[in-house]
Structures are given as structure tokens and as C-alpha cells.
Length: 305
Ligand code: DON
Image 1: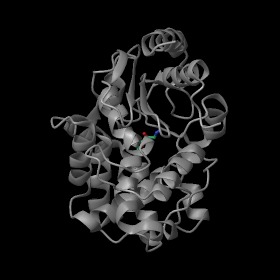
Image 2: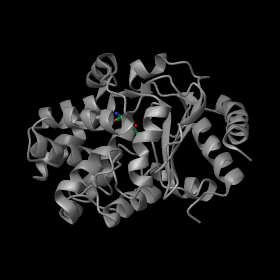
Image 3: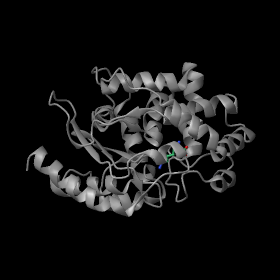
């Protein structure tokens, strides 16, 4: 089966499934997207083959928590294993914005992909760069080859107005002495990084960083092979929150979801993938995205298992 046959079947299955979900509305600007949109892209790592995609694969959407993977990569590249003293690497088994879990575990977030963990990563990136969200945007521009991608100020403003839970998480972290920067600064950069708009094409290309075991688009090495392995491992156990077991069971790839409806996934040594469908299930994962990736790994046999 060639890429086009696979893409056609993936799209057919995903579009049928997406009626089951609902678009995120706790960030009101996200609720304005078309619930029936669907896109999927495959970027083959280490080849000059063009990215292939289907549906709305070149329509920008809000990357939200997908940003957490790339922020983590930048911090790991600078700090190495020291980061794991501030953030765990275990599945959360709780919603991604749980306050109770952070309080119980005395300010050490379960993993870098729950919101508390991502706030700690952003705090560290801010210390390292002086402009965490700007550094992340520039990095994503380079890895996707799209110099025009940017923040969406409307989405950022909407999240800022309704971000009480993240503010509570950040204050709780500060209370435990876990933030080096002021709460306001960390929240500002976190919200901006989540508001970046990218297409499936951009994200599949950027995800090739992990498919190439830590080598950037310009062929320079950002992460050691072990660091890239660690990010993939944490994606597998925590990239889709408290549904990571179900996702691994169905798809069998390291992946990260965002409430904008995107899911990125890594086929190590082969390709970066991105699926997008705004309608989410109860865990905050794209219904169409999961079905698309499930269909993709079933048809190609490309999973890590
Ligand atoms: O902090 C938030 O709630 C959002 N900016 C991002 C959450 C997110 O994407 C979680 N994904 N499932």
C-alpha cells in the first residue's frame, strides 16, 4: 500500500469517528473552530521525500499541549538528566490539570506533560533563554521550515482570561519553592507557547526531531540518543494523559495530544506524524486523531511493538 492509499483509508476512518467528540470550550477561542475539520500528515525522517498529507493538513490550528514536547526537548538539551529531579516521568492517572495530585506530591509534577510539569519546564526554559515562548517559536520555525508560524494572540488572550486552574497550579508550585521565575512570567510564556498555530505539515516535520533520535532538521544534533529515547518514553506513558494506556494499546506509538485537537506521533527511525480533528473525548484527546493513528499503525505495521 502506498502513502496515498494509507492516507485515504486513515481519513475515511477518522471522519466517521469524529462525530463522537466535542470541541474544547474551557478556552473559549478554541470553541470557534470547525468541529468537522480533519487533517493528517506524514513526514519521512532522513529523506528528501516531500511531506504527504490529506484533508486540512495545511490549515493552522492551536498546538496547545503539543508545545510541551518541544519545550522539553530544549530544556533537556541544556540540562540533561538534572531536569528529572524537578519533574517525574510516571503516568499521571489523573486529569492533565489536577491540583490534588500536585499537592499530594509536594510540588513535583508526575511528568512534563501534565500542566504542572509543563509549567516547571517553561520556568526552566525562561531561565535559560530569557524568552521561553520566543525561543520555542523560533525553534519550531526552524524545525518545520515555516518561518511564518506564530503565536495566536486571540487564543492566548482567551486562555489568559480563563486560566484560573493553571494560575492555581503555578502558585502551588511557587509555594513549594519549585519556580525560579515569578508566577506571572511563567504563566505568560506558558500561555503564549500553547497559543502557537501550526499545520499538520509543520508539526509532522518538527516531530521528525524525535524520529531522527534527536537530530535537527539542519542535521545538527540537539539531543543525545538517550535523551530522545527518554522523551519518546515519557510520551508513551504520559503523552495522552490518563488515557495513555488505552492509546498505547490502540496505536502503539509515542505521542502527544493537545486540546486544540492535534496529536503528534513518532515512528522512531522512520517518520513524524500529525493528526488533527478538533472534537475531543473525555480525556482531552482528539477522537479523529486517535482513530487516524490507530488506522495508520494497523495498515502499515509501523508501531514500536
Ligand atoms: O493549559 C491548558 O489547559 C492548555 N493550554 C493546554 C492543555 C492541553 O492541550 C492538554 N491536552 N490535552
